[in-house]
Image (tube, rainbow, N blue to C red; front, side):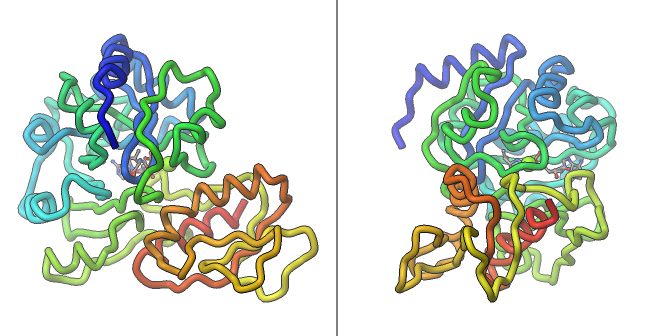
Length: 310
Ligand code: TXA
Ligand code: MG
């Protein structure tokens, strides 16, 4: 993707004025504001209709600035060296002297920190004098946005500016790891946990059970396209959209597939855009056929399970 410097400048100017802009990341688009500014962070919560007790992820260019805000430990540096920038978010202890807005942290003494890989947003971050708070650019509890058009569909003219970055290549949100004590995964995401286990040299517990909410954002109902979803379908109902992991030999107008050959990475990339497409095509419900529960398939199943609680 070509970098358009004048677009980056526009986004920068809005952010400097305390406005919110949408930014592309490799996972999903984010709704960004100055993480030091209470006013900018308030705007983010308002636009997203997000409950104030659900803290925001703060995005940095590199680890150097994070030192002003958080305590960094060995596990952090091991993972950072190998996996950042990339689809991984760290939960770290916040320093008392940190300038991060208490609105962004929901007054918690921890901070979610991420280093997005998307070059457009990296260029923007490099230009800014502050880190940016950016939750996914969608209305709270709904499907995330993976293109600038998705963001437009959700917010219309309410957002001052959308920084164009093409379609997000990962397509699902970052994996969240809590590094404060014994490392544990709080949200499955675009980075397969196996990569983390290899680097840290141990098995990492996954604590994202929808029935045991460990962080406010791990809500039971989330990522919903706004219509009911049934999982592991065997029988298809009339007038229902059917979602398959791989392309079928027979194709019907109500059949949707996530990947030509059942590649889970490709399927994750296409998940949200396909859910949005089904809704746009006016179907009233979705039946999903079984998706292998390995690698990024685990993340896809996690999102579909939460979306099915709608
Ligand atoms: O890929 C991503 O992570 C995208 C892009 C834009 O970076 N962002 C994203 O943000 O998914 P959001 O706000 O939709 O999801 C952030 C999650 C929420 O579930 C929130 O509860 C959790 O991170 N979170 C934020 N701060 C936290 C903290 N201090 N402790 C535990 N969980 C936290
Ligand atoms: Mg979100």
